[in-house]
Each structure stands twice: as C-alpha cells, then as structure tokens.
Image (cartoon, rainbow, N blue to C red; front, side):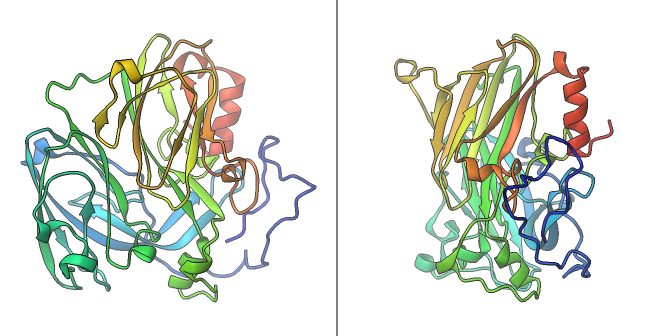
Length: 358
C-alpha cells in the first residue's frame, strides 16, 4: 500500500524524509472487491422518507491511480450502500426536513452483525442501534427498520455501533442532515467529513499480514470525504469548495474519526452558526479561521467569498494530518476554489495533480 513516486513538482517527496516503502508495490492486490464511489446526497422527501441501507465489502482509493502520488488504497472497507446507489465511504448523506419521520431499513447481507446508530434525532430505545445496552443487533441475513424523527434540526452523524472500535474504523459512518423549518439555503452548500485511519486494520481484514490492535492504533492516513490530497482537489471525486465572488457559503463539517482536527481556512474568516444541531445565537458568533472538531462533533460554518479570487487551502492544522503514509503534502487538505480562477495556470497544475482531465 506504499505510495508510489510523485510526478508533480508540488507533490515531490521530501528528500530528507525516508520513504515508507515496504517493497510490496508489485504484489497482487489483497482483494478484488469493487471500488467505492463518492458519497451522494439522498433527498428523503423524494422517496417518501424511506431508504434501505446495506453494507458492502469494497476497496477504497484514498488517492486515485491517476493522481500524483497514487494509487494509495485500502484493500477492504465496509461501505454503506443506500437503495440503488453505489457503495461509498463516507456513506450517503441523508437529508430530511424538520418534523418528518424517516424509516431506515437496514438489510444485512454482509458476513458480520451490524447496527445503525444515529446521533441526536428522536427514536425509541429499540432503534438506538447500541447493542451494549439494548442487546440488539442485526445479524447476517437479518433486517431491521429504524424509525427516526426529524425533531432535532442540524447536521448529525450515523455509524455502526456493533464492535464500534473496528466497524466505525472500517468505514461504516455518514451524515444525516435535518433542515430546520423554513430553511433558506445559501448560494453554495457543502458537506465534509474528516477521518483518520490506521491502514493496518484494512490490510488485516483483507487477509494481509499486518498486525493491528485497537489498543495500539496509530493513524497513518487522513481524509476529507474519504479522499486524501491531491485527490481531494478532484471536482468529481474529491471535495473542493467551488465558489464565485460575492457568494455566501455554508459548510457542514463532521468528524467521524478518532482524533481531533483543527480545521483552518486560508483567505477567509467564517462564523460558526450551528454546533451538533444547535443554532449559535448571533451574539455568540464571531469571525474566526480555525475551529477544532473533536470526534463525532459537527459544526456548520458560514463565510463570504470576499477574497481576491484565487485558490485557497482549507485543511487540518495538525500538520502531520496533511500527510498520506508519511508523505507531505497529502491527507486532510482541500481548497476554496473561485470559478474566476479556474482558467489560471495554477488551477491547471492542481487538476493535473488531482488526476482530473476535465
């Protein structure tokens, strides 16, 4: 799984840092699972507030083969698959309206027991998806329908809560968004999920010889919406925040990892308008450019695209989190990209790095 040599001048390896190459680059892949797709938004109103969710064993590209430094992939993840969509890591972004009821059927045709636990929203005890207390789980070949109330507007997370220390780490996480009554969307709106990984777990589950223990977990890869830079800059596979001058941008950002991540924006100061579904009063809002996001925390940030039109990094400010398998730059970094800057030479080079041909 070691990173191959980079081709871009920006993504060249640091000659003072030894490459963590285990010599296995020419080996056959550990699995032949299908690849994941980027997460998609499921508008629940369009399908009667019903959805069926499954778990699929898949391969997951943190950095694609076409990108500089790629490929770098996890040979096995357990991806959520909603309805007729492709499996993805993170899982689908469920979007509903305040006051509605959502019936989520989990149809488990995977090989292991799983559950679906959703933060914040109302549910009966049996639908909490936490077998450590309600003693319930959805075994292989079984099905369960969770009834979820849209009674807490805001951005929330969901994940498997069976053997959570491994199942969450294997990719079984996602976002559910409950829009408050009378919600007025901004000019641009984005969802980002931050995640840190110990890739030994995925190699071990794929049948490799990695030695992994949750008590000795050590992150070596970092992602935004399941991708690491430079794939994060890819307009179709990644998570660039594309804006136009003068627009209002709202960013729903969640941490489904194990570590805290101080998220920083260049060139723009934002206000936090929601935390864990609770609106922040205007009197408590202030301009800032770093917000620390702990595991399971969710923030909604709002900013104006009022900078000199260009391309501005947005990244975790624990600098080693902007690495992939020890190589910098990589990991948890994307950018605020002005449409007005998309014809520049710099943007073209970034797209080359990301493997995007347009």
